[in-house]
Amino acid sequence: MKNNKNFGYSYDVLSDAVTINPHNNREYYDTITLDKNIIIDIDKTGFPTVIEILDFSKILDIEKYLLEKSSLNNLQINKDGKNIIIRIIIEVSTPRLDEIKTSNNYSINKGLTELIIEENIK
Image (cartoon, rainbow, N blue to C red; front, side, top):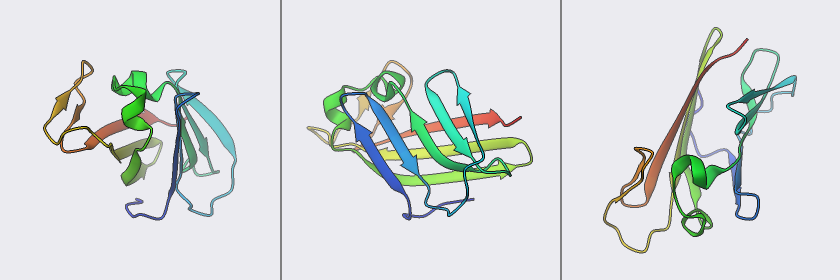
């Protein structure tokens, strides 16, 4: 499980992609693709070394300009055998502090939104 601030995060507004690097000093072994928009580089044990999410604003149903100055608030990676759960919480600069609902059942409440990825690694 990884749950600390020792990770890299970048959002590219032109490609609408986010890259998360857990900085876990693990060696790349293979790449898995989930739903064509989520690409995860893994080590030999199946633990993520880099997570890339394409069409990030579309997945969260958030305007790109809100993600332009976003930052990673928390990252948790739980791996149990062949199952992996990645919990990503990003902080988003919002024009106001009240809650913004999106059509994908995600919400930005006081600038935070959460994305949970759950997958069976083969």
